[in-house]
Image (cartoon, rainbow, N blue to C red; front, side, top):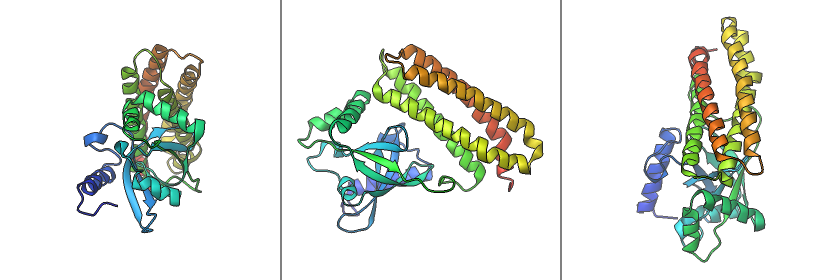
Amino acid sequence: MPHPTHPFHDFNRRIIDEFRAHHGQVGGPFEGGRLILLTTTGARTGTPHTTPLGYLPDGGDRILVIASAGGSPRHPDWYRNLQADPHVTVESGVFTYEARAVVLTGEERDRAFARAVEADRGWATYQEKTDRLLPVVALHEIARPGPPNINADSPGEAIRLVHDVFRRELALIRREMTTGGSTLGAQLRVNCLTFCQGLHHHHTGEDLGMFPFLADRHPEAAPALDRLRAEHEHIASLVAELRKALTEPDPDPASIRTEVDRLTTELEAHLTYEEEQLLPLLDSGA
């Protein structure tokens, strides 16, 4: 591992500190991208090591990272660490969770890497610089009982931070659609479908958990909760339309953009209203 005074160590330390201080938002080369902090256990030292990494959504309960090391001839330390101990910790800026690292092989690895290259030619440039096959690693979230571990100081802040995750992801998807040209790439479709799944889980959790909790303690909030439930149903129908369009054999990029724009408009209004109505209740000691 780099010596503590090594410039690369200092660079990583600045990114990590900024990431944690601003709930996953950073400047510099990672600005506007999808970034996590991955903590592995040192293969030789047994001590934890944290590395900022770009990642690819992959649907379900996993994300993908690529051990590119900028095209270096040797694998990065974090990759060698997880080969020795696949139990890792992932920080998204809002959520922190334990995960199991699985190195993809064969056709599964090749399909995932091809998706990455289609979305960002930089991955191919890294592969061209080295003789080693760049590993693709799936990070599977390890399910745990109870609510997710959100890096927030209050229930209201937790909801706002989760909402901001959806806002940022939608903005990323819309930007990717703008730069994607006349086709809809495989990774972009995965990004959209992963977003849809995450939004569905979030709204289901609110309907079954947070809304009944608040209704019991704040009867006066019933009209707002009824409206929010109705908006959940409406947004679910928009998500269903987007899913349908995305899973067509030859999806039309223009139609997808229209569906994403419509969902963005409706979701932004919904999130804003929910924050106005519920954050004061959540942070009042409810």
